[in-house]
Length: 336
View 1: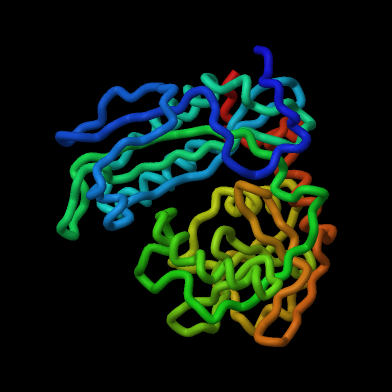
View 2: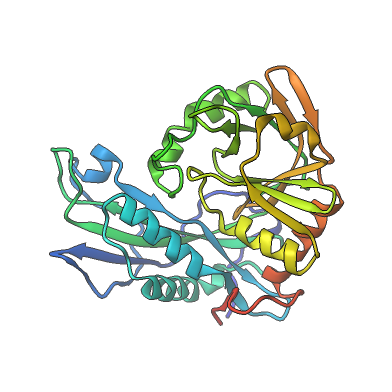
């Protein structure tokens, strides 16, 4: 298939309307057949539940062109599983997990001309999302929902190369105990917007949140899980209010099975930060973003940035995604 005439190497990380998107509607207790549409706009009542009470959740994933020319997605079954968990928590109907994967495949195939070529550093970003669309004025779940997936080509998250991030320990909380921190709800991101803008204005790249109950344990940032390296050990914070990152779970397996590292998934105390040699944020957009500095109210803790272990984890996982490293069974969904 002939690719779109795009300067792939200069793509930013933003929205570009593509040809087709997937839409399915839930009403009268059941999902319709669903399918592709070229209509990129949504029409709804001013009283739609999503507008009044933020009943919405989403996922983020990518399609790539591999070294041998295949178009693939990375572990879409886990995105389907996580969205199902989000829906249950928000009293939304679960979109069937197998159908979720089929919808992803349909959406990518319909936009194959928009999948960037191998070696460009770009990818096709996919955004599955669901929301309550019927009119609701009382505080209650919607009765009608839409599940949609759109696609947009995006460039590498770091233009001009990977640069170590500077984080600050946040004075505000990301999620409450027994709240919604463990699901990918839109409202979690809405509440972080004030804090991330403030962080940028103060010269920081991100906020690092601690647990809101005791403020003594590290959690995650507004949009990514955090990992630490100490010797040959990978340490990841464990908490009921942390979003279960698919990238982080994959990194854990890569560390164990490919690099022979020890792995500790456990609560990480704030006062441990000075003991680690390397640190990074992990997520769909950048895979691993190295951390150079964490500032705790004037106290600066420095790390190796893209150190040896972070580099090996990054290279191995991106190699798996791009087809140059053999993937574990079931990790790569071939589209075409």
